[in-house]
Length: 324
Image 1 (cartoon, rainbow, N blue to C red):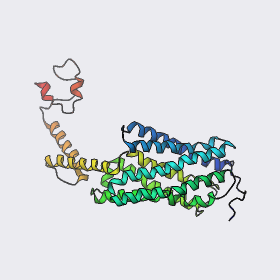
Image 2 (cartoon, helix red, strand yellow):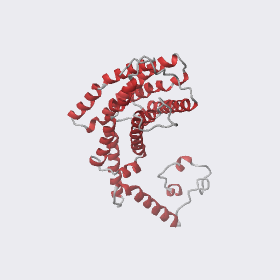
Image 3 (cartoon, rainbow, N blue to C red):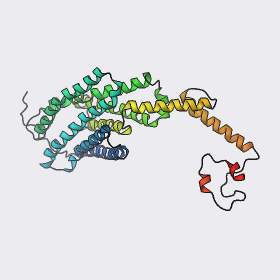
């Protein structure tokens, strides 16, 4: 295997198909990361390390989506340098996943998780060097290391997804459909997790040439960018660790169940909103049936020469107060 054979001649995509695919993928990635960074910054709390790490992850990932604007010779070295920040962002994502999943893990599991993340870092040093040599047309080592990226990048993330789904069912006794109905935020989270894993699989199939075709020019691969965006979305949609978010939902569940029980309405959590809505409709029907109920047309109150907006906006307004 001759790793120094100069036959690659790596250049900026020149054919229209390759240029369009690469430019679209980079624009999609950078635009998504910018929006997520703004959302994360506006929702982060001061003094929380996890929130700062998420912001750094998003910021570092942006650089590698801008090399399409450059031309040789800047194109080659700029691509290689920005790849360093991208690889750091990928490793940082696993650290963030560890922090979010840590409350669910025993001590030995937590230590094993972060230790293995640290142990694979020499591969990324090799990958960075191989990328430099490949882009400079010095060695094709990168063509041999690239197919192993997913193996050194994604197992921890897949474990985190499975761990979250398992704990939702066992520790909190939520049904997935029930959870997504009560918390659309978790619906987006779970959907983004599944999408990221799906694109990881497609990325592996593409770099191993299991799938190929005219629509996917040689050397152009947008799938890892899509997987990366959806992984970052899972970090942004819920900034805190998963246990904290689920504990809040559990407390919400208990409070709503207690409220429903006090209203003499009993049932499962998924029926809580339906029961409250039904009770509201019954009260509204009774109010309409009562001939003594005053109309809530705030502009036509008897003996009222002004529009009382303060009373109109009160959810607990009692018309008999004005009547008195």
